[in-house]
Structures are given as C-alpha cells and as structure tokens.
Length: 208
Image (cartoon, rainbow, N blue to C red; front, side, top):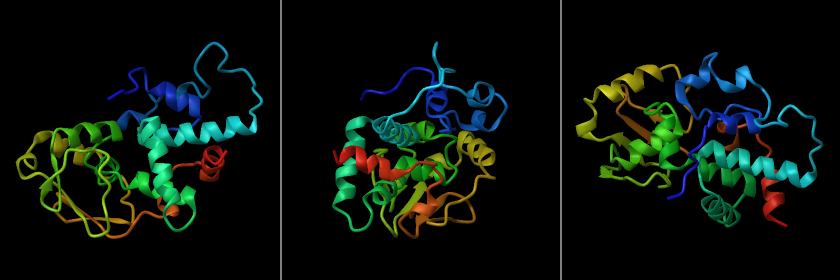
C-alpha cells in the first residue's frame, strides 16, 4: 500500500499545527514545528492569501494526515459518514477515531498512530478475543481491545506504556487496572476529538 515516505515533520509545518507523527519527540523542544513554525520550502515564510477552496483543501489534508489515511480511504469514510444520522463532518471524525490503529494509540499502547499501525499489522492485538491485524478495522461500542497474550510480557510494550502513562484517556474508552485491555464504552463524539479543524469545510469540499 502506498505510504508517505518523506520527513513527516514537514507535514506538521505545512498544516501549521502538531499532528503528533513522531511520538514522544513531538512533546519536546526538538519538534520541528517548535523550531520552524512556518511551511517548508523556499517560499514557506511568504504571506499567502488563501482562497475558499484552499481552506477546504487544507482542512481535508490536515485531517487525513492526522489519522494517517490515504486519499481513497478518506473519501470512503466520507461516503460512509453521509449515510449516518447526524452531522456528516462529526460522523466522519467519529469514524476516523474508531479505527483500530487510533484506538491502540489512544489507549497508550503506541507513541504515534504510525507505530500503532505497525503494531496492529504485526498482530499484537485482539478484538473480542480474536486477533485483528487490520489497522482500518472499525471498533464498535462494547468491543474489547487487548494486547495479545504473547505480547504482554514484551519489554517494548512495557517501555511504551511507561512513556505514555501520562497521556489523557478519552472518555469513550476505558482501560483495565493492569493496562492490557481497553473497552469501547461509547462512540467518539466531536468533543472527544482534539484535532483543531473545522470539519464543515471538508463537507463543503466534497459536496461540490
């Protein structure tokens, strides 16, 4: 599957906000956006007037890059959102939050969504007791996501969990005392999404 292979810090600088693509590094002074808070490239510091279409495009690109999905995947999620009850933009964000790789990241089992995708693909997690190695798998209310039995004793998971121990837990997820199981207790709502984006711009873009 096609993936972005260049420096991911350029994406944060292009969108003008942290997308937390480098894990723990994003919380330090080494963050590229903290050091160079302007778009990459020769004309990155130039003043540009953004058109209505440009703002819509940036909102879409920001959201797509935040969750690490391809253009075709993002369009499919939008089509799925249009068929759900409620505001399409909010439903789109709810679907993206419900991806298994994002759930793994939110539960503190990965330092970034990219790392979460890799861990899921390598088969380190189960959903309702069955191994799932598809990062785009959408969880539902009542689903239990757990670290696979053979992976619980891994030093890697112990280190990751310790590093991310202070990360706030979204209210639509709950984690057991031992930290090896997480349960989806509700569908993510708009207030549960910490991405600073106007999702109505995405709807306007795709509605043309």
